[in-house]
Length: 316
Image (cartoon, rainbow, N blue to C red; front, side, top):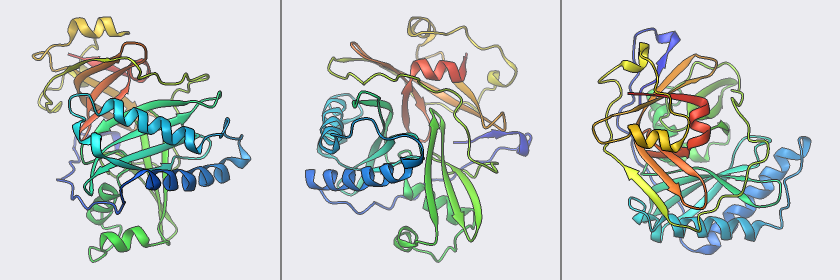
């Protein structure tokens, strides 16, 4: 995916094909529970100076919730590989009470979830996606650091993962503001958590919106899904100077969404330093729950429609 940035003027930075090197995980519920236990301890330690996690009865509660969501989503078209997938979770940035869950099947990444704890002790599915380039993929990060010559080309993936002198932080500030913060030899770098592109940031990004009282996610009902082919938003550039469509809710999106429309979602990131255009693939509406806008960002990315419309615009 390419980012339109003020510091590159009219030049585009493109990312080459991503090298896939599988994470080392083992199957079974014991992996999931072990992963969550470690994650919960890390998150509690990180957040002791902010506020305590809401009701962590909950190692088993989060594990059960993620397993239920995985099973439910696995019934949807495009998520078939989740049926036999196992998962590992990793803490997000300080104060977020969140985790990224990476799903793997037969040694290959097949998707991800972003999960946040709510104040009543339940959990919210903030975002999810499919494909072998999940959000916060160590594989993508490794490839990008090599391409940017921030680590030697002779460094193997396993050496990179085990190198304790490289400090890695996952920062998820809001939907589409997700970055890796990397400290190498006393230098700090920020990379996009999905594409791996180097970002023009000098400090941690701040959230553009916050959900004061996020509700628990309900996937108990069936999903109504519209999904159309991907396209390159750089083939046409109405989003550069054009007028956005007045879309503020699902019903208005449904009126303008069709296979020929090729709608582009555009959001301004990092105080306007980066403009991110993404092809709209469709949406997934859970009858008794939330609606997610489906975007093409190095693979399908499902983000909460309500928040996406607050953070960006849709162009024809």
